[in-house]
Length: 445
Ligand code: MV4
Image 1 (cartoon, rainbow, N blue to C red):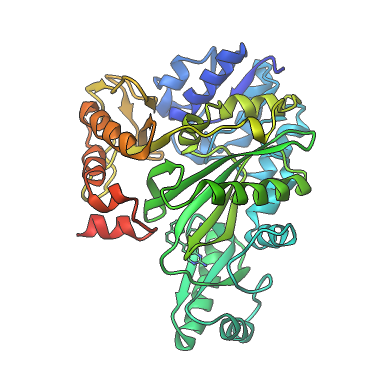
Image 2: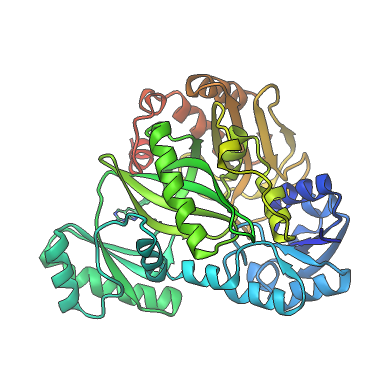
């Protein structure tokens, strides 16, 4: 097992990783920017190192500073959390080149899945269903026209280096195709330094459903079921559920088997998530995430697994020690991402938290680095707390979520708690009747 783990992140996820380390008996090193000197992740770590000024590119993305921090503290592994350097294959390579274990997949797998065209090609070869589209990159408008004619309009032009919604353009018909193609290309080049694009049939009312996978270094791969992440606004998820209100245990089993069989053939290790669009009873793979995700707690709650502990164990060379038949799903879990934003305008609201009271009780979990008196800096992601509830079924989970939201007090800054309260009271949400477009309309209307 590792002697000391450096956590290359901040906020709630840094605390989440520290908690897993502590239960494994592994000391932790926090890194922080000057803006985070008083932050909870620094206070709770065994050691801490200041790695630079507030801007993320100078601190949490500063590879040389992070590697130096690992070296001077004697850390033998680095956990990247999510965001920042978590899906940076070059970083993972450099960590390993310094004789430190990167707690995550191999750099080659991170790189493969970061290239959305390569990821789709790999999944297709492994028998995972895709959205109809181009066979790889589309080099010019003429090819784009031929592909669109074959699959039918509307189509979506996507950046191969994109993901998370950046660099996508819809063409409703042949007249709009050239413009969509050129705009997507230009945006891809300026945003990612890579103008490679591909085309898919545009699905106009899908749900976003993702499968959680875990693999060890010996070819054992299991899944922990799906999460429904359809409730998002401008590609920022607000609420996630496990399981999805839209799919049956039989569908879960089938999709899980497809995903685990595929990743076993790929030789993948550590955690990963396969993202699917689900529409009209069909699943289509779109992307794979090679990191621990923000919404991992809903999976932990229904499976009774500590995914961070599992990540650390398999990175240290341990075998899973269990198989799919031993993973049972129990009840329903829902997560609300509470952000420091105005609940109507979504403008960030950094500032001093003057009082903080977290809800508690049966089936309630709070993952947050806030404390009374802390300062929410303006430099980073605005998520300040995750409220996760677990109950025997979805109806009880929603009831518990309403109760927990009513108890939650964050004073001094505006947060999105009032928006979450409105969602929970909505009959369509309660019926589980929503697609990826539902929330945009809800907040507009
Ligand atoms: C799509 C799509 C419709 N059809 N692909 C957006 C984020 C990126 N991960 C993929 N995305 C989409 N791809 C096809 N062929 C609609 C979206 C999409 C979306 C997907 C998941 C969650 C929220 C979304 C919001 C807008 C668009």
